[in-house]
Picture 1: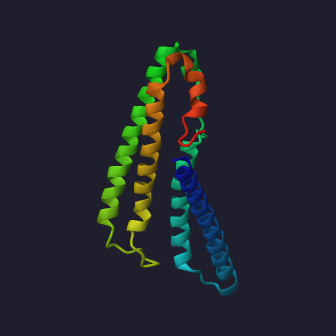
Picture 2: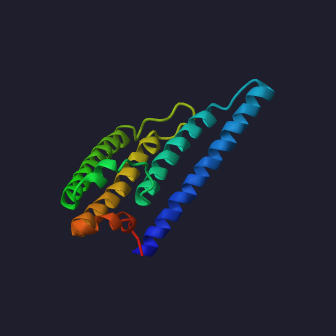
Picture 3: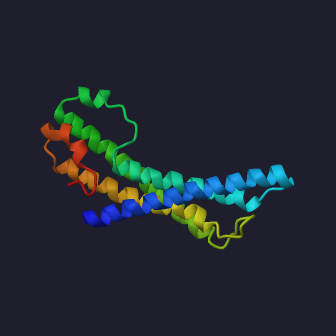
Length: 170
């Protein structure tokens, strides 16, 4: 299972790097075209925007799995172990609910825009909204795993749990 998770992480990183490289090339080419030839490439603006959206969502998956989001734990640290565990569980359940809402909304938007085409590239708009589905499924699995680990961890050992709740932790 750990190899599969590492492979998925690597795939996400490769896609993120490809999106970033494509954005740089397209935006630079568009700037040069506007400066040198007084005309741009409309498709580059659209595709760069799509790459940015994919890059942001896929990066958020990696950040969630690695517990790298910014957080303020002053309140949590002040609580007694059982209250801390209850608060963390509530926060996790709320994040799972928000992820569910993103999944439902993104899936509906993907279905609605399947046959709609983007103005400049002619690609299906489903590619744009589909990243929300990928994000929600991936983060949903991560959050469910984190909730499972939280529930199974004794309240007095929560201070060490954060480092061990990542999927694929050795």
